[in-house]
Length: 259
Length: 332
Image (cartoon, rainbow over all chains, first blue to last red; front, side, top):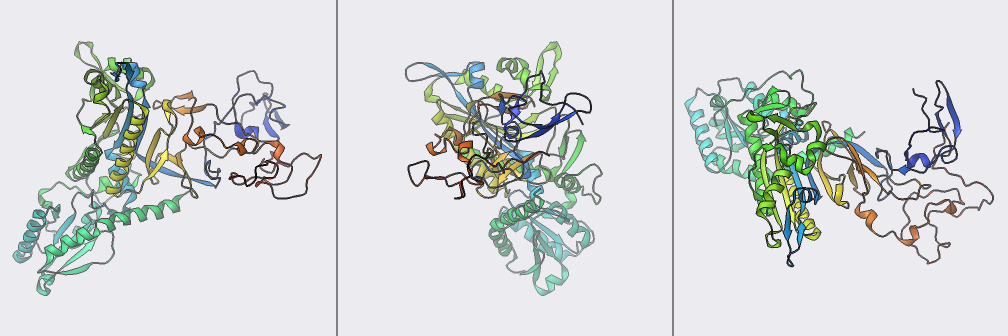
C-alpha cells in the first residue's frame, strides 16, 4: 500500500468525476504510514481539473437510459473507422472541386481479420467433441462414411453419391480409411463437418442410409433411391437453421459467462 | 475429396500450450500447425475455411461497390515517415534493412500505400467517391502472440479504404461498409455485437467495432441490457453522478501504439442540443428532498420549472438542513 495522497502535494493532479461526487474520502498522507480521514474533495484539495478518466465497468449506469450495464469479453472481428484527413493532409492527397479549389480527400478505413472470423466461428460453435462449423464456413459440407471399405457394393454407392453431390456443387469429404466406425465418427465430429452420411452393408439391405447433423443428437434414415435429392434438400433446408443454432449457442453461453 | 488422399492430421490429445477453444480445436482437427511464435501454417482443411471466409467477404465488398486490388506487404519506410506514423506506431511495426541499406517495413495496414496511390491517380471531384479493398497478409510485431490464430504476427486481413469529397459522402461510404460487415457476419453465422469505439479526429459517431462475445476475447464490451447501448471499455461512458453536472470537455483515447493522447471528443448524443429542462438537472438546488433521480427526466409536462420535478417524490421539505446525498458512497 502506498501513502501518496492529493492533500498538499506539489505535482499536477487530474481528478476523475466520480471523486468529486464523494463527500469525504480517506487518502494517503504523503508520509510513511500516514493516512488522512475525513478529507473533503474541493476543500482539502482542488477539483480544478476534472476528467472522465475511469473506464466504465459492469454495474455502472448506462449513459443513454440509466439501467445497469454488464461487461463481457469480446473478440474483435472487424472495425470501421472514419479517418478524416489525417493521411491525405500529411501526404498531400487532394482533389480539385468544381471551382478548381484544392481540397484534402476525406478517408475512412475498414478492416476485417479473416483468421479471426475462423477463430470466432469456432469460439461460437463447438462442443466437447469438436468444432461445429456454420454451413457457410465448413471446409466440407457433407462427409460420406462407408463402414465397410472392402465391400464393393458399399464403395460403389459411396462413389456414386460422392459424384452426384459434387456435381451439385456440394463439398464432400469421403472417409475411405479402413478404420473402425468409432474412429471415423470421432474424427469427422472433431473437424466439424455439418452433415454426416453413413453408408453400411445393413442399410443397403434395408434400402436406406443414415444421415446426422453435427449439431443434432439423433440420426435419421433416408431412402437409398432418392438419397442425393434428399441430402441436397437437407442442406438447403438446414442452412438457415444451422446458423441460427450457432447464434443461440453463443447467446446462451455468453449469458452464463457474464461477469 | 478422399480422406486417404487428404492431409488431415487429427490429434487425440489436447495440446499442452493451448488454452483457447479455437486454438485447441484447430490444432486437434488438423487445420493449423504452429511454425513459430505467432506464425501458423494453414493445413489444407484450415485453408478451405479461410478461403470460404475470404470469398464471403469478397462477394459482400463487391456488392457494396468496393473495388479489389492488391498492395505489397513490403513498404518503403519513407511513406511511414511522411504520414508521421513511423514515430507513433511504435514497435508493432516490423522494420527491416535490405541490401544497399534500404529501410523497409512489412505493412501492418496500408493507409500510407493507399494514400500514396490515390494522390497520384485521383485528382478530381469527378473521381470521388471511391472505395478500394484488398485481402492480404499483414505483419505486426506482437510482443505476446497468443490464442492460436487470434493474435499472430502474420495474419490475413481485408482492409478497405474509402475516399470522399465531403463528410456527407464519407457518411454514405461508411454506412455502406457498416451494412456490408453486418451481411458478412450474418452469412458467416457469427453472433456479433456492434459496439461504439474511440472515435479519433473526426469525432461524432465515427468508429464501430464488431465483436463476438466469447471467453477468449481480449476486449471488454460494456453493454446495457435495457436499451442495447454497447461500447468497448475504452469508449464506454457511464451516467454522470448527480453532483457533477459539467460535461466532458476532453477525453483520453488510446492510439494503436498503446499511447494515450488527449483530444476534444464528442459523441452524437452529446452533440445534440441539450434540452433546456436539463440545464439545472442534478444540481444541488434541486435536492431539497431525499430522493435521487434514477432515470433521465423526459419532456416536461408544464412550462414552469418549479412545477416539474419528476425526479422528486413529493416529500416533506427539509429546510435549513444539508441535503442528503445518498448517491455518495460515504468513505469509512
